[in-house]
Length: 223
Image 1 (cartoon, helix red, strand yellow):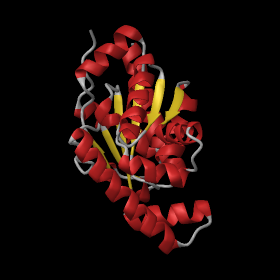
Image 2 (cartoon, rainbow, N blue to C red):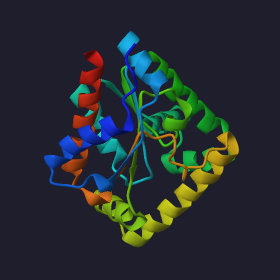
Image 3 (cartoon, rainbow, N blue to C red):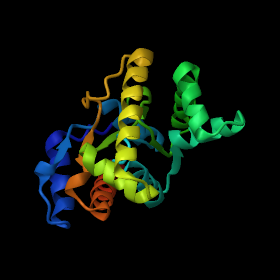
Image 4 (spheres, helix red, strand yellow):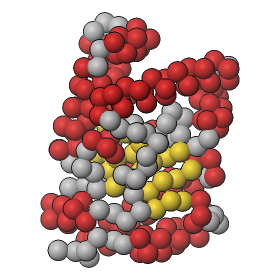
């Protein structure tokens, strides 16, 4: 059985990646990868990566990129939410209000994400996946609220004030719901192996850092 990659090894590999983008290791927060996940990956060849982050942090674009780069499936909890709304003949706005009063919606989405994780070979794009599934790598993308709001407003062609208000309402609601359902504190980042502040890098740099680092670690485990 191979040993878990320690903090020093991960920092060394991250430094190698960062040399390509002329950035500093201080912009990243890294923790050692969990031994149990390493053992499972080595023995079964299955890979499960969980990417989490608040709205506008860039998790969806990075998760899609990573799935394509490594050749894994991509599953997004937001896509499941939209599909559930469609199944009930509701708009996203109607279904969002419905979910506030019906916790089984969140429970069902999380059950489906856990089911996808058990199949393996997948990148999970979800706020809660890092807490709810036994992923090999748990990655958190963060950015200041204003930076995230500006990204969403630009992407969706909406007014900043409108997006700010909506984002605050959504994130406060999620924090309450997830605390009530699972006693999860979204501000506790201790479950993550890698935390990246995407406001410090370009989108391409974030993709390069995460993609190259994961590839290095997976290659080492094959050896």
